[in-house]
Image 1 (spheres, rainbow, N blue to C red):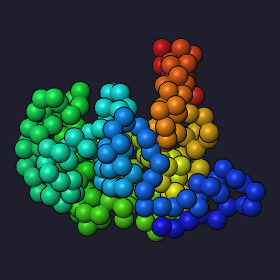
Image 2 (image 1 turned 180 degrees about the horizontal axis):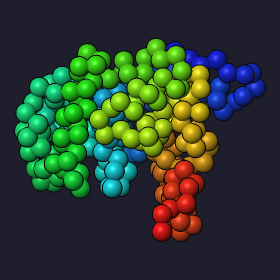
Image 3 (image 1 turned 90 degrees about the vertical axis):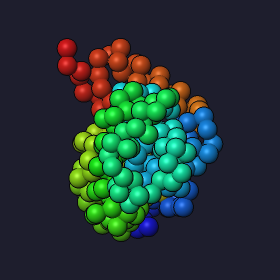
Image 4 (image 1 turned 30 degrees about the horizontal axis):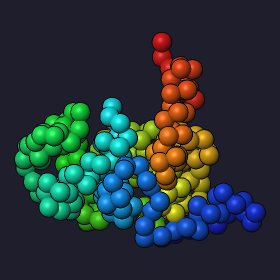
Length: 217
């Protein structure tokens, strides 16, 4: 993986840039096996982030492990080859994999089709060799189900938790690059998960969103 070159003495960002590794440090669920899947399987990480919508973080990021258990695999090409409605049935089987299982099943299928067609079924190729944070963000924005905020958070996850920190990743991640515990990118322990929850609660009370913008009345 390409590593960013950062100024000497910049401890926080230098640490993020030089910890490129095969296994990340994300610890968002209470299941060690589910966490390890997120930290070692790029497609699992992409799907977990995709499912992080209108459900608790743990539920969203347990989704890839639960989906793999039901399918017997987590291969982009194999999922892409499925009838979308067959995947809907897998998501909807009790207990459902999401609050909106049919919608998220179709988005997961579309994501796998995109990864298969654009990156040969290898999700890691989405960020391997990118030259800048801007390029990484642009690639993420092309993914089905990935809007601006979700894409910026994923840039921060890659830099903070996976050691993938191309030059300019901070600008691409925006607010999610700072050390404030504002997103899943800042979770590497149960304690940090609690801090993110506390921060979000405080933001809601202050009528602000995750990027410190005023919430619409």
